[in-house]
Image (cartoon, rainbow, N blue to C red; front, side, top):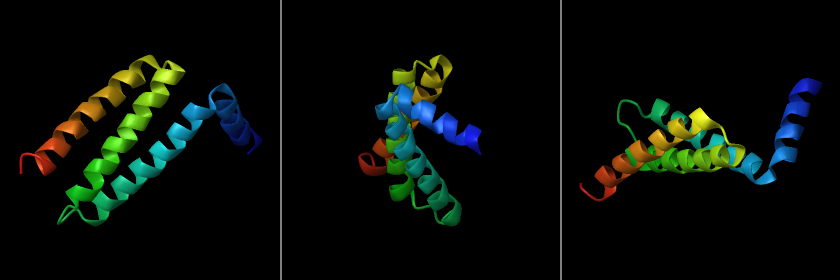
Length: 93
């Protein structure tokens, strides 16, 4: 247990801003995943797509701060895909 607590303390110490971005990112992504899971037969896209986009943006911010090379590519991909989905959902529809 001390190792886990130490890990979070070290993460916070290295970059408090990135730490809070990751915290809020996790809340948005877990929430979006739950919404998708519980509405899978009639997906609540107007709820989970913006949540995924916000979470992806926060993930991108924190990975840039932490200089996580390959995670930047992954988060950038999710930001682009969720932006396209958001545009299709709210602008093109």
